[in-house]
Image 1 (tube, helix red, strand yellow):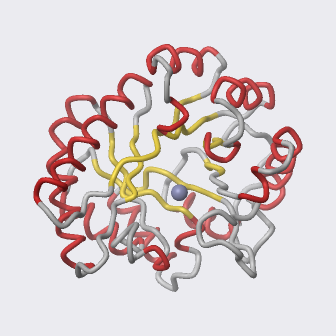
Image 2 (cartoon, rainbow, N blue to C red; image 1 turned 60 degrees about the horizontal axis):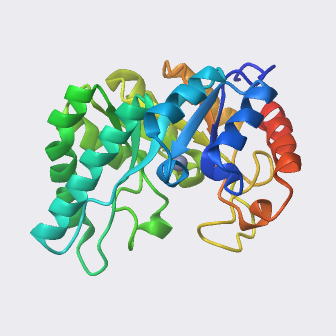
Length: 276
Ligand code: ZN
């Protein structure tokens, strides 16, 4: 089994997890708590000087783990697909300015279009960004999403599909992101994490829990330990594959966003140490 987590140094908080807090306040609180990393959502940077924000985060001893998110490559027309590529090039620039080594991709799906066609467009879109990513030394991580989002958010729904695409692209600047919320149900998960151990593609590990019943398909994620995901078991596989990065708390929750965020952060810390 995975070793016990005795402190918060390997915990990374997503800014969206404490969405009511502006990034300056969130960063201060995370740093005070001894949390080691932060993943920045692009909306948290609105109206900020991105370079200065990166300096501020590093000054608080927070490692900037990734920028969320790029992607949404599939579209009905060539012009819209180019727009998506342009936005991803811009995301790479933002990651560079921030000092984040990774951009996480929610790859996209277009209603009414075959998933296989969307996947083809996603692969073309990622490939079109590679030169820019390499020049900036920013890695792109394909994050598979739960099949409930296959209609409009991602045509990549399993780690196998993400591994297939990353291996087909074969670039040091493309990897995969594993989010337990999206993948916990997959009987092939252990084998596909092992495959990451061989191809070296595992670039991010996102944690939260799947509540039963789930009341909202997007914004009802649970704290670690609050649902049915065996996070410790999945972390064991992840560590056995050689991954030694951060464990990223990514909890979209209308319930918790409506609570006092200081109290919520205390709950996250406890849940992380006990159930992750
Ligand atoms: Zn995620």
